[in-house]
Image (spheres, rainbow, N blue to C red):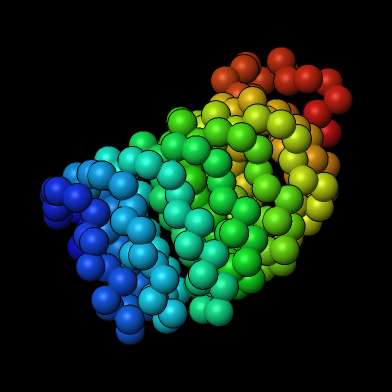
Amino acid sequence: MDDNALSGSFPVGLGNFTKLTQLFINNNLLTGTLPSGAFEHLGQLTYLKINDNLVTGTLPTELGLLNGTLMGDLLMAHNDLTGFVPSELGLVASLKTLVLHGNSLITGSLPSELLALSELELLTVSNTSLTGSIPDGLCDSLFDYEYQCTSMFGLYEICYDIKKVNFTCEYSLLCGCECGECPEELVA
């Protein structure tokens, strides 16, 4: 259902589709909050993509109820989500992709419970209002990450050091500085 100019509130009856395995509803005009109970009966859901809508409110803590599923990809970028990243996401052991960038009102810090996501390969939380430090060890399994434009500068230092990547110009492009202007301690 991508790119269909769907409008109105996020579907309240979503939880009734108990055999649903994938849901792609990005690039629409869906509004309102993610309804309570929408995810609790979706035990077969593996992929949820609601990027680029107008969804508001907080990330539901009930997303942690997907811990017994094969949920691999959770993409909720470019909405108007607010509040904290729920610690319950750390219960979704099979989660490989967590995409929350472009939700400028997501605040707080990344919960240490995300360390339990041993399968996590991709984390994007750029253009949010996250602050604080990065939980030690979070970058260990990450294949890719995007954390620019937040107050949490430390992720670049930690992840690039772990991955031993030369990022002189790549870092510059992400940070908006010119090549060669990157902090000396971060240049390989």
